[in-house]
Image 1: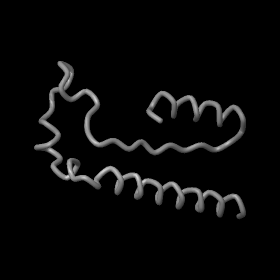
Image 2 (image 1 turned 90 degrees about the horizontal axis):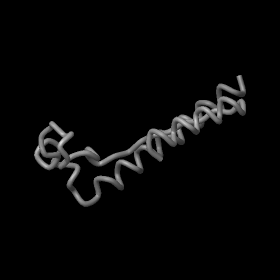
Image 3 (image 1 turned 60 degrees about the horizontal axis):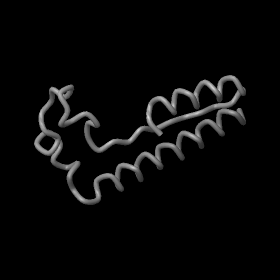
Image 4 (image 1 turned 30 degrees about the vertical axis):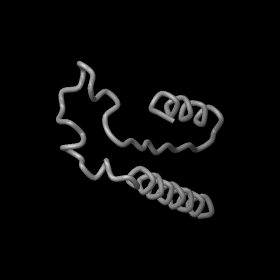
Length: 79
């Protein structure tokens, strides 16, 4: 999901009386290499992002965060 889809998910969840969450994971700027990008090359600014297992590790950490957040919310609901 990206920001627009996450926004819709939050709106629908609110209308339906539900909770929703979203974690966005990216490797580097989506606009790098376009006239709109004014930053340094990502390979220079974030060399670790070009390691072969970088994205997999980020997704794994974000998944762990999401699971923990769900556990915390479930615990809050029981109190």
